[in-house]
Image 1: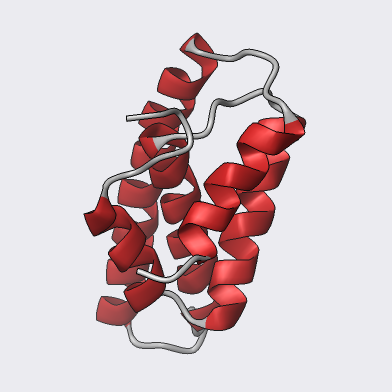
Image 2: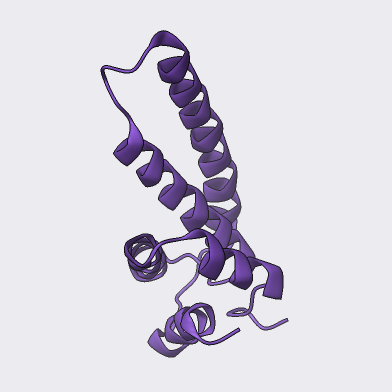
Length: 115
């Protein structure tokens, strides 16, 4: 599997689970992670951006006036997401390198392209 490829399941997950605005956010975060942080496109980057997008979704849905159980579930969900982000960030940091513009764009095009 080349570095820009991810499993077909993850590509389907991206297209199925995220709204257009969430896809835009995901892809923006992927580009930032590649060009600013030097993270290599691949499944670890996908998972990292997936959890960043889930975190953003949870923040958007949070209602400060919600009852105790809803707030508890939101806090626990955020803790789980933050833990997953830490795991993937460590994995990405281990493999940092210069990534060409073309390699990043191939990763982005693969996600955006038809199934």
